[in-house]
Amino acid sequence: MANLGVDSEQEPLLGDRTPGSREWDIIETEEHYKSRWRSIRILYLTMFLSSVGFSIVIMSIWPYLQKIDQTADASFLGWVIASYSLGQMVASPIFGLWSNYRPRKEPLIVSIFISVAANCLYAYVHVPASHNKYYMLAARGLVGFGAGNVAVIRSYIAGATSLQERTSSMANTSACQALGFILGPVFQTCFALIGEKGVTWDVIKLQINMYTAPVLLGAFLGILNIILILTILREHRVDDSGRQCKNINFEEASTDEVQVPQENIDQVAVVATNILFFVILFIFALFETIVTPLTMDMYAWTREQAVLYDGIILAALGVEAVIIFMGIKLLSKKIGERALLLGGLIIIWVGFFVLLPWGNQFPKIQWEDLHNNSIPNTTFGEIIITLWKSPREDHSEEPTGCPVEQAWCLYTPMIHLAQFLISAVLIGIGYPSCNVMSYTLYSKILGPNPQGVYMGWLTASGSAARILGPVFISQVYTAWGPRWAFSLVCGMVVLTVTLLGVVYRRLIAFSVRHGRIQE
Image (cartoon, rainbow, N blue to C red; front, side):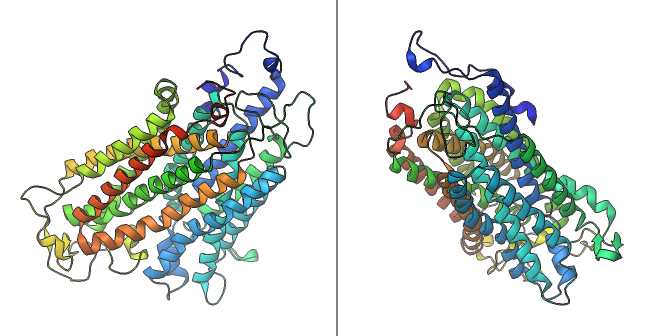
């Protein structure tokens, strides 16, 4: 991951300069330059570990919850899953505000320590005699609270890079985050070899098994991360041109540093970017949620087949996203961030338009077992419950197809597999493009001012989207089917593109807006 920033580091530090101009006399020293990029790389690692902390247990939560507390049902599972995003939504503005007025090491270390403690709590949720499910709920909520440091990470990177370096650095950050989401389930699969029983350390009542080993690894990596932050991370802030700025986060202020400009931030652009980011994450969250129910309904896949095939598809999308993140760094220099954001939204719209049912072929109807095996009518937790069904169960008699209790199954044409795969590829191109461009434009709009609080609100809006997206799609898909569900998503994207068109000219860098740098 350390190599992700190499391209940015090879670029000119301060961009084009006018010879003889006094404002360009301040040159970044080699020592400061190396320290700045070492610090940024440590935060790449922190972002990677934060996303691993979410995904490393996501496939084992349901069986572990059933094991420790027999009273837990799918409805409660929904709360456990959502607690991570809820915790992050609450914590992001808090840590962001903290980072604006104190050295950023403080919120980073505290947030990681909270995650470490929460992982340890998760490993001990089997110990209490009762109410174990609530201890798991608290543990996952606290892990999410610790993940609120994403706002601090992005605000630090935005403040420690020039405009020329910004897009590349934000792409590297998102790539590390995506890589964490991809590798987390891989680590979980490796720990599955330990088995459900594992070994027990009686002295401290610690069980090391397939459920607890991943979080114990997460706790160990968190401690290592704290040590690296304490020893390597330094406070750095540069303006849009790359010159060092004075800031409250600096422990020592250099006489060569320039003052942060005090012009106003374009609040219209800030609000619009938050809305754009919310919609982008909302759409991708609902797509991830609906993949398994949709494929089970349309192609009569069993639970085991759905977990395997959809897992492969989502893993492939993760790899695709990392490639897109890397390619964006080059493409943005030629056509600009706003054009890439617009193009990404159009590609997403095409992806969902392709998903609309057509033709005369209908899905196989599931007449047996009228309980809906693919998607619930009531709770979010049951949407993903099929992901944790034991592969050892006998699926030979498992009813498959589109449940007849979903009335739309009887008259809605099936979505062909080719349609679904093309749509997944398109969405896999559009989403990472929009994700990186949203963060990049947002950081440039804010300029060299402290960005902690603003990044906190942006992260919180993304967390809210990840909570509401699955709820929206579960209700609409169950009641009205894929035609209405994906038509509404297409309409939502059209409105988002319209909003982008209205504010397009305002989504410019702070220094460009105030005439200090030419676009």
